[in-house]
Image (cartoon, rainbow, N blue to C red):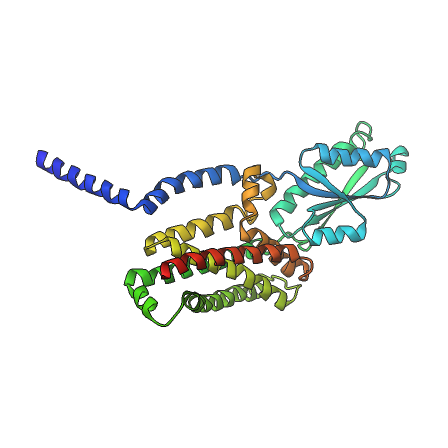
Length: 370
């Protein structure tokens, strides 16, 4: 029995030494669980707060100002602009506001004479879950404000007419499919590219490639072109299938869609190359690739959880997540029919991310090439 215990202890000591030598795997085993707990603990929040609200106040009275104050003081809405009808459309298209409160002229006069009046709330319906909750908030606030003017046992004097843009039926598929496109494209491109390069290291063929009359840039471009073509075809195929099976609209242009997809995939492929420059085994490459692609795309892009409800630190981190910009651009093209000019900021962010990760990957692989 003592001999068996000594043998087990010897094997255990040997394994601890082996784990200690493999610093990257040890780091993943210790850091990833804590990182996942913190990420889910803070980002997993279904409460919708800080909804960007614009107001089209056509009455400009004490009653209209009181209604606006009720929205702002509720804690659910942040007043970001005063708009007219044309400006409201532009701001919703650019995702600058999620809701527009339209107060008709004559609201104050109607309330003074005890006549019913209606206000309108325009909601961006590209995110069905958010739109449903925001609609509930707006209805509750208007009812509470109306009770101030109506007497006991009287019907409310102020009613609300919500109008959902781009997704009037609040179909969840129109919200989920763009997010799934981002998730599938990101994780496929990152993992496939990372494993492709690391596979060369494990098999020993990387040394043969280095001895060939081939520079690092040509090797990187040749490695990424096939995966770029496959990933782009896969993403376009998902869009086509979604249009056929789920009724996904295509209100924008296909060249605009291909441009956005290409920029997003270039960043994903660059991220995969950067992972391959860090990892020496396919196991480590897969773990790191999933960590840097899966969790940020699902948790920090606004796909599942609203960014405005996250802590300020996580909100700042989301600015470095390419899927955040990709989802805004993709939903704008598919659901709103916007052009390149409307999503120019998202295109710039995707282009900067792609350039940075490709540059970092090229520098690291170039050093390893020499």
